[in-house]
Image (tube, rainbow, N blue to C red; front, side):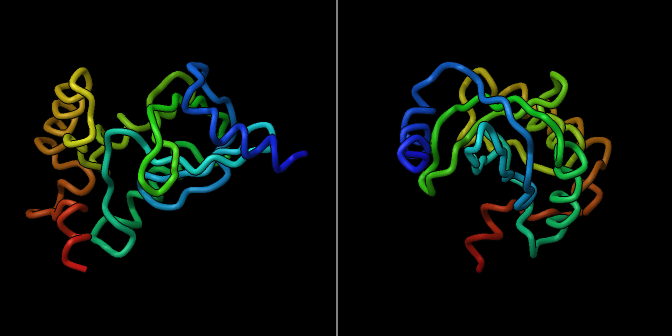
Length: 154
């Protein structure tokens, strides 16, 4: 019965307009976390951002920053969709603050423009530009490599 319920929840969640409340129990990298909610584990790709890969410059710092922001904390997940790997893609909030936006504002992720909805593109791009101008996080590097380009080189 528990497996059926889990299967149903995983299929139906993107159709629900309600948010998921849970606790962050894992941080995979700078843009992917695991949230436990009512006995269900959600693997979540943070919407609208792309953080450096684990073995890329600033990859471990991005992961640590995301962990500092949300690991072990209660969060609200607003599901946007599912990606091609079956992960939920969504916005994660801690105490009303959007973790996705904080990662960009603090310079630990790029605004992932090709996947941002029109309403979010300008907001995320502006946050990224402020981080760049201030030399925050990965922007302290003179020529940071975008994760999508880094992945192609592998």
